[in-house]
Amino acid sequence: MQRLEYDRNGYERMKTQSLQFGFIAIGFLFSAFMLARTFWPKRPEVLPPPDALAAQVAGEAPVEVKVIAARQLAQHGEMAREQIHAQLANHRVQEPKVVAALLTATARARDHRSLPTAVELLEHPDPKVRGQAGVAVRAILGADFGFRANAPPQRRAEVIAHIKRDISNAGSGIQEFYEGSQRP
Image 1 (cartoon, rainbow, N blue to C red):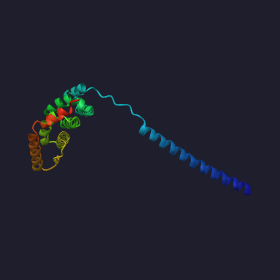
Image 2: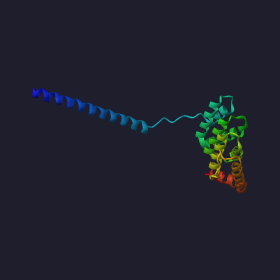
Image 3: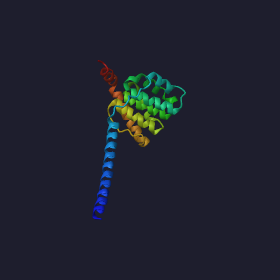
Image 4: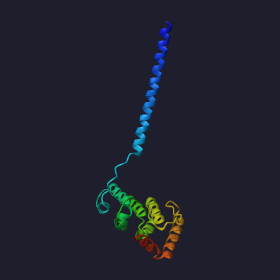
């Protein structure tokens, strides 16, 4: 009888240990899977060419499609400066969501030629557009003027006047800086 009791206890102990090792093994497999997933090289996203994206933004596509195209233009960065500049110049015919996405692309491309438009859009009625215009101005000029899209109108007007004053004081220095930095 004691022998049977001993075997039963040994069996229970072995069963418990097997379950523990099983859970440990599952944990190791899950960890290995997560590590592999994290560090496994991802396929690069193939973006449409900037001209095709600009045509989507300018076309009669739904607003969501235009926003996606503008965000993809932003991913092209400096390579899409011409297209971004041209589309931002037509901001009056675009929805605010599209204009905000184009301003994001302008900030990423650091298109100094779009600076006057970005400064103009600091006074846009939509706070998201104003905010993205502030980001674009900050990225292009390399300085934070303290512009806040949701600040009271009087405070925004003061900051915008300060930005305009600094731009006029810089004169052609901004253009020279950007065009000089593009030379080989």
